[in-house]
Picture 1 (cartoon, rainbow over the protein chains, first blue to last red):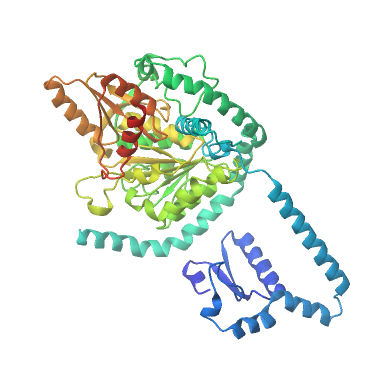
Picture 2 (cartoon, one colour; picture 1 turned 60 degrees about the vertical axis):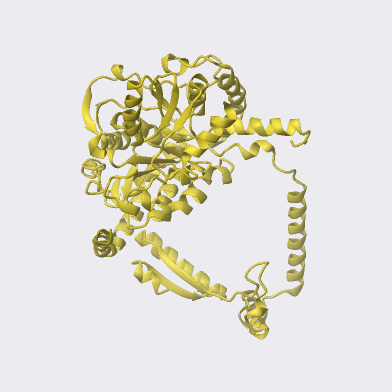
Length: 155
Length: 391
């Protein structure tokens, strides 16, 4: 956040795992940005629970207990859950049924996406420029000739 | 070299940091002002996306078929220079059509003797006056530019259209992309082509792929990035480079390099109005030393078309930019020995006019490519490989 003044920008640091705090900070930043036509930096602090990537095993450089603690205490969904339950606004049945609906919707979307055919050969050459220039036309023709010559089928 | 780089960095450090905040706020203000939004809406009305997308794919497939025939079946090697009408089977005007005629210079009217920076200045003036969304920006552009290419533009067109940016090439490129993606025409200047590398991610990953990754829903064709390139004698490592090979390896970009004031004006106006992002490289040694009669009118030179500077029968020589001066001297020497050289200026490096070169080499049987950039993986390698395959 100390970089913001270095660029002459207003800045705010906020607890990124607190839904209400983030909402308040972003609303204030948006108001300031619209009033002054200037950028505002929002630094939302959080904790990376998962591994850095699919090729990473974070247990090699950090304590598993640390990750667990962070998950239990700072996870925004858990915090929201506790908040709503505390005020008795949480209907567990509704939550379960919403969860099931959304899961089904995601699975349906995945199936639909996976069922789509692979892109056409032409899509490699179109929209690179606003019109296909001569060299791309030539390269596409060569590719098609190659496929015909070696009897490779591709739509 | 050491002294020069120290002077350069100290000259740039102090004033810039203090001006940064004001420049950033004024940039954002100019971009959100109401006049820009009005122009943007006008621009959108002229180019409705839905109809263009459908029409484009139809045209490109029929154009493809027609072009294939033209490219390989026509053996008349004089047709490109002397023909002033399109071949009958071209369904529409293509932007990168090597048979598109050059402007008829005598008919353009009065000319003025201009050097390269003056002719580029004139072209920028025309771009700013004909398209109200045009903005010109870069480092030191406001006072006239370190090579005087943007002199008098700020006083004529206003501080909201001609302005300085902070010392940030990726910012210059990024801002050009953003502005053009909203329908405006952005002419950004990179002060030396040697500094284009901080902007390479913006150029290669954003600018060049903007249209493709959105399936032609959005584009940033209004971008033109100008940069002085080439050796100047005292430039050293970082004021002399010719980075065209790095840029030509990027599909989606257009790369243009003029050889003199007259073609620079026409090529720059074509580049600014081109519907794809253009990198316009200007050989800096020619800024003052190249002087030609330049027509006062607004004219465009077709992109994707090479120019045969002189016809010959014994060998084809291809070059671009400042190198053509050397090649001209060489061909003059050769002609004294009775060797007739065909000298070709490529003008547009991407997409490059392979048809003209192929036709020429089929006639002469020999090709020489000469460029200022390093030999290994230089753009000459691309030309040599293509000619090897086709001839």
